[in-house]
Amino acid sequence: MTTTTSPQPTGHQAAYARHDWSSAFRNVGVELTDVPLVAARGSIPADLAGTLYRNGPGRLERGGRWVHHPFDGDGMIAAFRFDAGQAYLTNRFVRTEGWLAEEDAGKFVYRGVFGTQKPGGPLPNAFDLRLKNIANTHVVQLGDQLLALWEAAEPHALDPRSLETRELSRLSGVLKPGEAFSAHPHFDPGHHGEPRMVTFGVKAGPTSTIRLMEFATEDQPGGVRAGDLVADSRHSFKGFAFLHDFAITPSWAVFLQNAVAFNPLPFVLGQKGAAQCLASKPGEAGQFWLVPRQGGHHAGASPVLVPAPEGFVFHHLNAFEDAATGEVVVDSIYYDDFPSIGPEVDFREIDFGAIPEGQLRRCRIDPRTGAVQSEWLEQRCCEFAMVNPARQGLEARFAWMAVAERERGNDPLQAIEKLDLHTGERLVWSAAPRGFVTEPVMVPRSAPAEEHSAEEHSAEEHSVEDSGWVLVPVWNGARCATDLVILNAADMSEQAVLELPLAIPYGLHGSWAPGG
Image 1 (cartoon, rainbow, N blue to C red):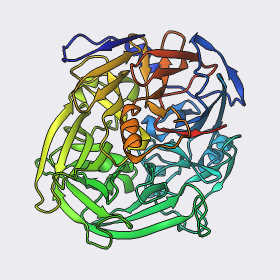
Image 2: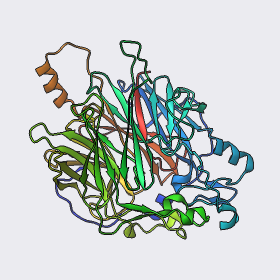
Image 3: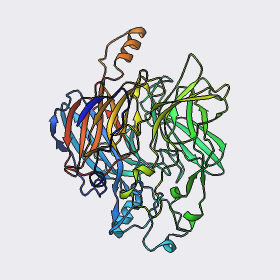
Image 4: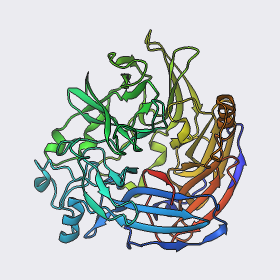
C-alpha cells in the first residue's frame, strides 16, 4: 500500500486480478458486538474519538440463488467505535420486514429493484409490484436514533450503540406510510445559525414532486429538539425524476434531473427490475433544479430551472455560491451514460471496459441568465467524493475520493485520492494490487475550544481544512476479509491498518458521529 504524488496523469495497465475483486461478494456470516480491534500496522490516533457507521449489502445469496445486482442485498450496519487509541467493532443486519421474511423462508420472496427475481421465472414475478425496503444505502445519526436509509421508503431506526433495530420510523409523523426518504441527506454545518440535516423525498412520474425537508441536529432554544422538522416545502417539475443525490448551499438545494426515461412494462410483467427499466435519452441533456431553501436569500422564490450538460450523475461532491460572480457552483461525478447491468449478465463478471467511468466535473450556473459553464476537475475514474464536513455548501479547497489505480480508463476502485481543487495537485494512497476501496469518510480533527476573532477564525479554518483523518474500508483480496485503513487527511500517509475479523462486501455510504 503506497502513497504517491500525481501532478500529471499517465496511463498504465490494470493492477488487479478479477478473482481478488470478485471475492468480496459474499454473505456476512456473523454479527459481532464490541470486538476489540488491534492495528496490524501503525497505531490508532489517540485523539480520534467517535463512531464510524457504515451501511451496505450484507446478504447477496439465499438458497443457492444470488442477487442480480449487489444493490439488491440486505442492509448490514457496521459500527467502528474509537476512544483513546482503542477501536471496537459491532455489526448487525437491519431487521427489515423483508429480511425477516426471507430468513424464515430461506429463499427470496421479494423482487429486487435492480433485477433480482423470485424463483420460478417471470410468472410468479409478474404483477408483484411490492418494494422490499432493504435499508442498505446509508446510515446517519439524527437525535437519539441511528437511521438506516433506503431512498424509496421510510428509514429504519436503530439503537446507535447496540445497532438493534427499533422500528420502521416515520419520524414522529413527518412521513406517510411508504413515503420516499432520500438515502443522501446532507449536513448543513450552520449556514442559518444552527446545524441541520437537509434531505428530500421524490415522487416520480410524468410530473415529479420533490419534498425538501430540514431537521435540527442539535437541541435549540425555543424547545426545538434534535430530530425535529424545522423546514418543509414541496415543488413539482415536468418529467420523470431519477434522483439519488443532491447538493446544498446556504440558499439553494441543487438537484440534477438526469435525462432518463422509465418504461414500467417489463417490470410489471416480471421480466426486469424497476431500475432496469430506466434508459438514457440519447442526445438529450438533463436539467438543474435550484430549489430555494427556507431561511436562505431566495426563500419563497420559485425554483430556477437550467439545462445541464449531457451525461448521467449519481453523486455530487459539493456546491457553493460564488459571491464574486453570483454563480452557483456544483461539482458532480459524471458518466457518459447510465451504467447498468443487463438481465443476462453476472455482476461478478462485468466488463469494466464496457461501462463508462465516473469523472469529476464542475458546473458554474448563473441563476439569473441560465448560462452554464463546465470544466473537468478530475478525469481519473472516481466515485464517492467528499469535502471536509465543515465546508459542506461552501467553497472547499480539498476533496477526498475513491479512484481507480489506472489514471485513465474504468477499473475497480483501488485507491484514495486527495485533490486540491485550487491547484489540481493530487496525493494518492493505493491499496493495489490486491486491495479494493469503498467510500472514504473524512473526519476533521477537533479544534481546541478557544476564543478567536472572526479574522483569526477564518484564517485558522482555512489552514486546518485538511487536518484530520480519512477512514476507508478496504477489501483485502490476499486474506479474503476487510481492513479498515486510517489515513492522515493532509498528506495521505497511512496511520493504521485494522484487520477486521469479518468479511464485508463492498459497501455504499457511511457517516461519522463524534464523541464517545
